[in-house]
Image 1 (spheres, rainbow, N blue to C red):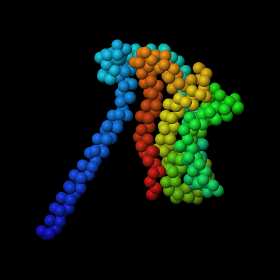
Image 2: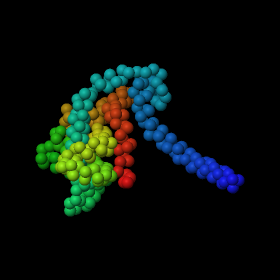
Image 3: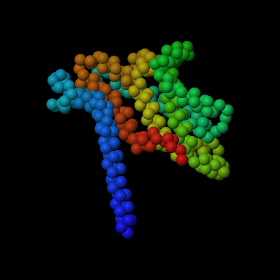
Image 4: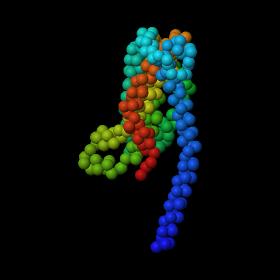
Length: 293
């Protein structure tokens, strides 16, 4: 009995010592994460507090909290540019590109995950490698190609390019996720007489909601915030996206920084809302396919 009690005490002491060591290791890591989080949040903090300052308040104190909240900056920002036209253009491009990329990527991922055909792995590797090519490297060939087929300054041409840029990530992510789903579900559906379309629509897509929503959010953020492609492929003023328009707007109001920051805040609000609506699926979708049981 005495030996058993001593063994329990030694085990408890070892557990406490291990907990203290882990706490000592985790503390510096937590401090680094806190510092990095503050660095990342600093630009957002500057944008928000500047947007609600007057010009005099901003000149007197650029980093501190405003003495008085000024909301007229947002009204000036809305009237100073063609915000609603730019906003509509961004909605059209983002919805079109993400919708087209999602449709193609779901079909491609289904084929890569569950079908057998020659060159499947090689083709998937080639598609995955496209993710490392920056758009700035291929923007000139893209411009020349669209010029030849007369799709410059058109929504269809730009939507096709955006869909092509975001599709590799979507195919890679969904393929990995589809492969983690139990094969027994597919076999059971086949035994019940379901065809491939029914398996995809009624089995795989409902089970892949977190991964699909994560793909949609990430791709929408990319298309919405992109400046280079929209600036080059949509040179006409009435076709500008919100990011291109807000850049021109900011240069026009570079002497009135609070108004420019108000415009930036308005431009970032839609994607913030989209993220908040889908955040419960976001983390789950990011790790989807990382572990295969």
